[in-house]
Length: 234
Image 1 (cartoon, rainbow, N blue to C red):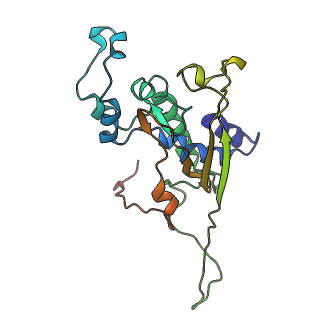
Image 2: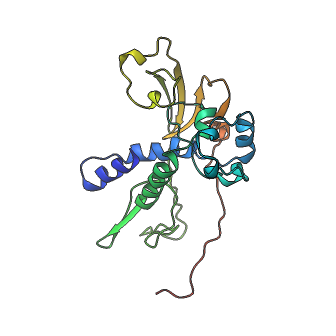
Image 3: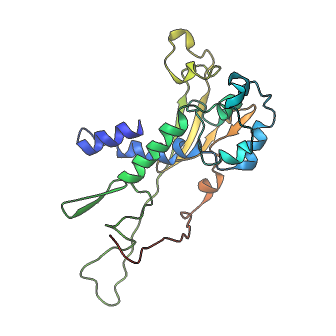
């Protein structure tokens, strides 16, 4: 979806940049696995059944949790908690999600015919734009104020399908798969960023959208990084 939305937007077939922005800020970010302690807790009760589906020579139990930090789960159906089966069974997620993030990162800013165009309001270092804005006709003593209003909205969505089987729930299994007692989620967004969702799913799994600090924050988080600059260029 991310790659298709980018290609359609850049080809002029439509404007889907808000969709891309939403994908990146929310589920593409949330299903990454950055927390080793939390992942160990989720997988501590796994009994090895999943690994037994593979030949002994294809299994490697050495420091598994540490080695998969930074990769992603395969789950896109469960809103607030990735079930244990999805957390330990990763198939297409690493390839598709990482390429989607790469496409989005590349598309943040483009330059053609001497003109740079910012297409996504996400951080990226580029050779065309820096951290400066040129303002003409400014006189000594003038004060310039730049505002970026962040609109907070509340939306409600009801799940259509059952959530009891990993494969069927991610596709369209037919009318017999309609959930007789669907859950209605209330979501709070800051801009395109989902900062709170209720109710929370219960059970064993990897919690998602624990974003209370984002919800309560009055300023964007800042991060200092060190960048490499070559002495010479080819």
